[in-house]
Image 1 (cartoon, rainbow, N blue to C red):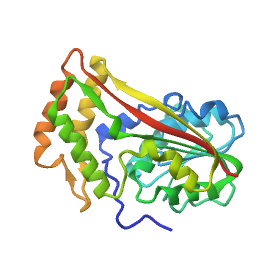
Image 2: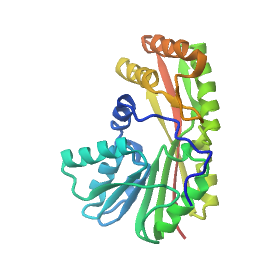
Image 3: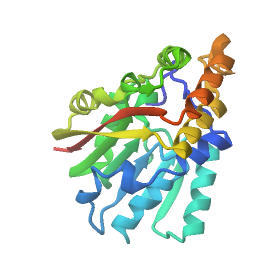
Length: 266
């Protein structure tokens, strides 16, 4: 099967977004998976983006192959450049659809995904496809944000409005912004067992972290269902200004939960 017609990837792949995604590491984003990786495991990273996590995973399983797939050529170009720069030879990147993975049945030991299921109209179908390419006993490891847990201080009413707008746009695009809390449900529905849920947090509370978070959301343009990139609708300027005011606060705090799940293919 291919991508559902009513599914739109909400986030852009402009330079600000790719730089932010490229700062992610396997040690942080896949900490719940790393103790289970051993050299020789073959890993598939679905929705790999610019590949910083993928390259990190490859180092834990060398010399076995790690493959990252994504639909965005901009992200794949950045991923290939990163792997070449870091001289990680056991990783490669391909353009592919998570609903129709171009690999044989039972060909991977691990399927990993970071911040991917929240954008999908049918996450259970994608997980079912992940189960198909996993060997019996193989691991699926998924991590997704839960936007409903986002909290900030000092309070900026327009950041509450931003969160409302974000939920509206993502759900209009077929996604689920509160995906983190639903991972065990989706994984179970896709036929996995030995399901182990965990959670972790991201916190932006230093001056540098606050400014990076504010700049990310100021630079990001969300895609509405018609494909146009929109700066948060008519409240866009006020929302961006609110992010910058919050970032300038010496006691500024922004935190949220990620849901994580590790499970096995029967």
